Amino acid sequence: MKKNKLMVAGPTEIESDVRRGGSFPMVYNRTPKFSKFILRLEKRLKMFFKTKNDVFILSSSGTGAMECALVNFLSPGDEVVILSGGTFGHRWHEIASRFKIKSCLIAVPQGKSVDPDVVEENITKKTKAVFVTANETSTGVLIDLEAIGARVKRTNAILIVDAVSSLGADRLETDKWHCDVVITASQKALAIPPGLSLITVSKKAWRLVKNSKIDKYYFDLKAYKKNLARGQTPFTPPISLLYQLDLRLKKIHKKGMRSIIEQQKDKSLYLQKRLKAVGLKIIGSKPSSGVVGILFPDKINASDIVKKLRRKYHIEITPSPGADKTRIARVGLFGDINFFDIDVLIKALKKTLCKK
Ligand code: PLP
Image 1: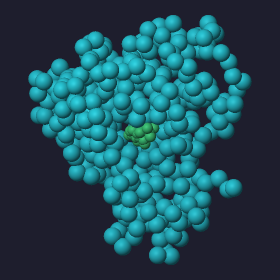
Image 2: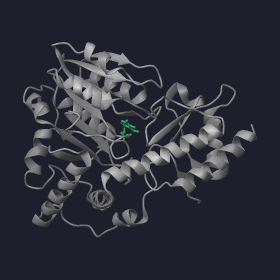
Image 3: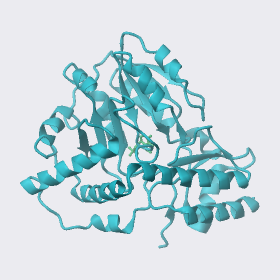
Image 4: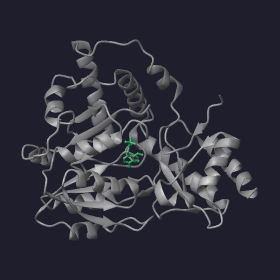
């Protein structure tokens, strides 16, 4: 079977050396040697998140980290502000509702980035947390996280950031921008297989943990904190994924976060330029570096284009989730994707559009 080129918003193409890292011989995790490995990994993760706070490793996809980011800091009846520009912002609202949290939902029109002042205006004395999505993956639109962080810092609320599709692709300064809780997952800019997620927690956020009355077991961060102090995780971690994470972080740090982010931005700008040259419209005035959303003209069905690219050219791009799937398709640039791959995609896209 011919393997399709992954230009979706994750999972990504994985560099061959990192891929091989997944087949290293298995080891037992409850050993001093493994603890040393975890503590070394932890140092690298702090650099990746740009934080001095702990970074906890979860065996779950990104949504598990979202749930973890909510259940540890809140209690039923608490009030929160949720910023939603699409599917993933809305997912915060769905999780909050499930745990009987009262949300003030700021729905941002598709493709738009919210005014940080509007976020601040909606925070009251009762607001416990503000939930945002750094890059709304369903459209590829970034928010001004730095400005929002500065506003939330002035309040008693904590800022909880879904950075699943932005950390490692777009600049994100956890501590400098006052992000109290940041989550990400393995299958996007980290470019390793899916199944692992990460969460970092500030001192301000830890203060809410002891008052939280939501029942949890697997995602109880207190257990993760206690175990991390000795280089362990409370439950068996995905050991092969950790090997791959280690390899990726080593490479990222060798290159430097700044140059990784610049490289990703160059890819995104190049793709945007080439798409515009074909006559296609990009969503949002601030597209992310990891995912670019294309708004197709009314007479063209985005879903059909996606299917044709798959069938004829073995390239996977992805329609927007939900009702927008016929209007919007997204191209993911995470992982082992280069300028040549972008050229190949544009050529295939041009041919597909011509045949309409
Ligand atoms: N948040 C964002 C911004 C995402 O892009 C995704 C997945 O694409 C998720 C959360 C959910 O992650 P997962 O599918 O790994 O549960």
